[in-house]
Length: 369
Image 1 (tube, rainbow, N blue to C red):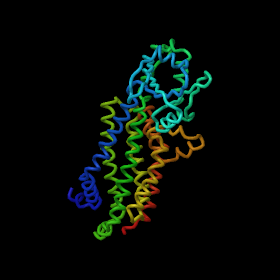
Image 2 (image 1 turned 135 degrees about the horizontal axis):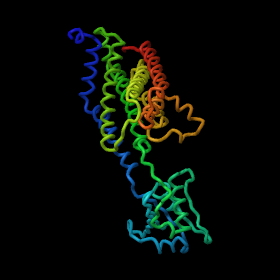
Image 3 (image 1 turned 135 degrees about the vertical axis):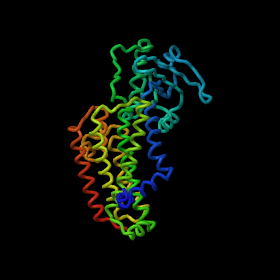
Image 4 (image 1 turned 30 degrees about the horizontal axis):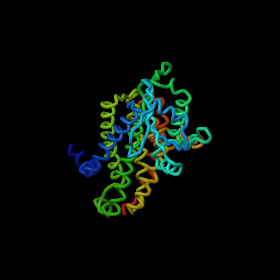
């Protein structure tokens, strides 16, 4: 026991751990913030709420739509102006409420630019026209629902969709998609800031110069940082999983052992990248830029909050090569698809190899001051 306490790596690990946990910001951003994000997004996308759409009418004369609103709609006052509401009840897909307001063309365009309106409806010589961004899926949905409603208003009241069978299987909800992504993103962010920024900050403050005078092995110092981050990531992920299970009833459907190995491989990969990024940088401003340059593209491209299949087909192959994509897809397959060892062999090997290569190169190029 005494030999362990006197071990250089143990002392470095203990020191780095105590330095990490005494910072309240670390506990909040690493443990509490991901839970709040998951709860907020989970509640937003898993509750069956009423869909509300804002539509602006630009008309000079009464139209067929005005007649339908007089029959099926209701009037109200909003910010001193008269508005009309048309509500359609649907027991399967949820209710839809259209809010109609009258305006001139220029004001309607301004409202559309500000996101205050989803659609503009005009009438010219008795012809109804719909104006919206064709690349906006929200606007497309409003157009399809409203045009169908105008064509057959009576048949769309109090809809009961007997031909629709809502899916209740585990893994098909948005929260099931989100949680694995948050785990992978939290792992990357924790390591990049916890290792890269820590090294760069200490180098800029001349603290590494003092530490190397002890003397100290370069490998022990870097490995101790990695061990502390792995421990913190395990705790952070378990807390996030606990609240996801407690609030949203999320379960891991695949092999737990495969998940642990993949998780460790992800830690190794991003530790290697973090050390390579920080091996020579002496200014925190430059280091922050490099960290963001590594994180931001992967955060946007790797399918954390939405599927990367929304990007052009030619880019999908490149996106799949990103380490965060491999980690996220692997964790998500274990959570939602029941994947086991065979399904995660490739991402585990690829992440481990990447981490080892970057770690060795970073350690060779590493400088204390």
